[in-house]
Image (cartoon, rainbow, N blue to C red; front, top):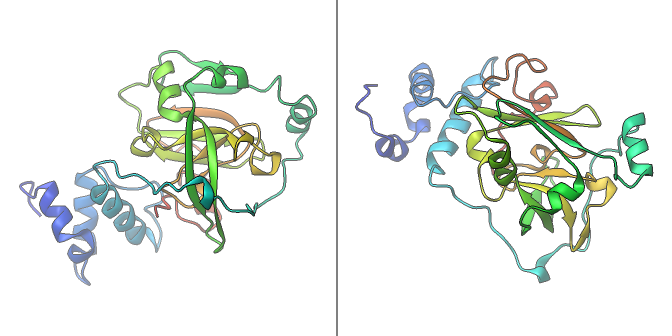
Length: 253
């Protein structure tokens, strides 16, 4: 595969076509050339993870949007997955209606910051009615209210070296996004749902909302955001806790 292969031709041909029985290594090299190797590219499923991530990134490079719905289509039932954090810190914040909660933002930024709920409410409000699909097969449509992650990142001044944004929660889960999803206009720090405050089981006081990926990427109970140029030293270096539990790091839909 020569360097003369254009992005348009790569999209048209498709990485899947390149990756025939004898071409998986070639496809991986092409993905690497375009900087499209996911953090969980190792192991027996590594080639598949790479092809999935690279293909979707190239095909959606123009910033495609997740479908948005009308208010009449909001689901009457919004299932939840997992218990509320039982950690002392979270329970104390919950008892105080989150008035002392802070979201720390650090790493490769010019101005590290600590945001309260009131601080986030001072940003322009963004609302979206989008579909949340769970990897377990259930889904629902809800209105999410919050601030675009991009607005917060612009406030702290992200370094040109940044490649990922890592998110950490009070229940010891963590996730990360590449910069394409971090800057995407639909990626929210959501503090409201269906016209009210974000319910505790849905991630109060603030959760990540990534409508272009499966539900487990929309991490609940946020406490810290760190901008990095590599994920190799976080957890097992697979990009999030999801691959450690048997899921893909990139969960595009």
